[in-house]
Amino acid sequence: MADPFEALNPPATVAVIGAGPAGLMAAEVLARAGTAVRVYDHLASPARKLLMAGRGGLNLTHGEPLEALLARYGGARARLEPAIRAWPPEALRAWADGLGAETFVGSSGRVFPRALKASPLLRAWLARLAGLGVVLHPRQRWLGFAADGALRFTDTTARPAAAILALGGASWPRLGSDGTWPALLPGCAVAPLRPANMGFTVAWSPQVAALAGQPLKRIAARFGATTLRGEAMLTATGIEGGVVYALSAALREALATNGPQTLWLDLRPDLEEAALALKLGAPAASISTRLRKAGLAPAAMALVQEALHAGAARGNLAALVKAVPLRLLAPQPLARAISSAGGLAWEEVGADFMLRRHPGVFACGEMLDWEAPTGGYLLQGCFATGVAAARGALGWLARGGE
Ligand SMILES: Cc1cc2nc3c(=O)[nH]c(=O)nc-3n(C[C@H](O)[C@H](O)[C@H](O)COP(=O)(O)OP(=O)(O)OC[C@H]3O[C@@H](n4cnc5c(N)ncnc54)[C@H](O)[C@@H]3O)c2cc1C
Image (cartoon, rainbow, N blue to C red):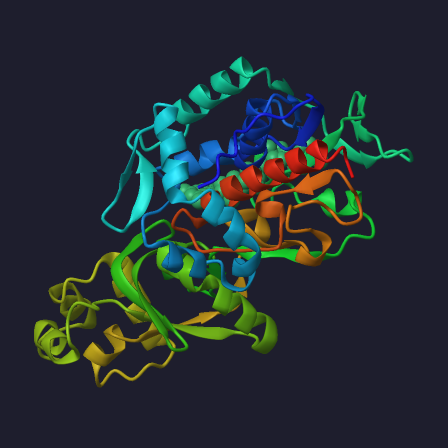
């Protein structure tokens, strides 16, 4: 693996815009190479979304073989692969270990810091960056390029030797990445920012809506030819959670093309239908008694009842428990999604992550046009492209900005 922290001579000043994981990683690579780095962010404090990711344990990357990991990036694999091979999960784990955030591989293969939160890692990282001379400029929104190519910010204008854009996607806008940057890059092709890893709207009855927040544990969800096991959660307006997120890209595309889609839930995937029928017992008992006997939790029972009210056949309750249809009406809004699909089109970006229309300006992280499921693939992609964009900038500076 190539060492990205190689020295640059002579030193130059680089502006990094966006203090999320991609931008801060780019700043570290640049600062270690002897570059004077200034990081601008419009919020008062850095890496708000990384801190939010920490609430779920901070799934940094995934421990599966690299080939399997690369396949998670779908159509963007070819463009991301060199960056991820140059900064693979082992590099990410070594980097986190170096910050005192020792990692472990969970039973699902997901990699987490032992502290299961982001704040200790971020604290150590910001201290390291300060030690490397990286200067943070909070409350400075990038407003675009001036006529002479300078970078315009809320209170200042900068003319760095190179710039790195790490402006994020458009989910959870209160955490900073509000998806307004496409207007700052006129003429650049941007694939529309759409929700990724999100829930879906379902027209629940008041009875089901009242169970918002209730989990559906150890279920399987089927859409098309794909069946996945995991968990989900009822919301007041629909359903979200791991197994739904994992199917969300396919569901989103199908909804956009063909309207409402049916997601099938198996509420007892560990039992064959015949064994489940035995547990449910004789039809003489009430439906709720039978569902309770079969070990269904309140949220799962409510979904079966909902399907019966909607006209599902009562004759074979076991078959229904193993295939409850949910009519998904629409993806939940981008603001509530874990991540974004779409972004700066790959044709705008060279292999070194430099913008073809803006020599000396590089882009990285979620603002590029890729998506991946949850499982650590998002942060892996952001960190790796942050390293790659910084290396691209170093190469460009070393060539004298040619
Ligand atoms: C609830 C939640 C949980 C998540 N959990 C995980 C997880 O466990 N594992 C995982 O891999 N991923 C997770 N993610 C996704 C992951 O956090 C993001 O993919 C990642 O933070 C994106 O990094 P980034 O640096 O590209 O952008 P961001 O982290 O969004 O950072 C972009 C920065 O740019 C700044 N900015 C934007 N526009 C401007 C402007 N015009 N001027 C100045 N500054 C600007 C923003 O303020 C922000 O600080 C989670 C996301 C959410 C919402």
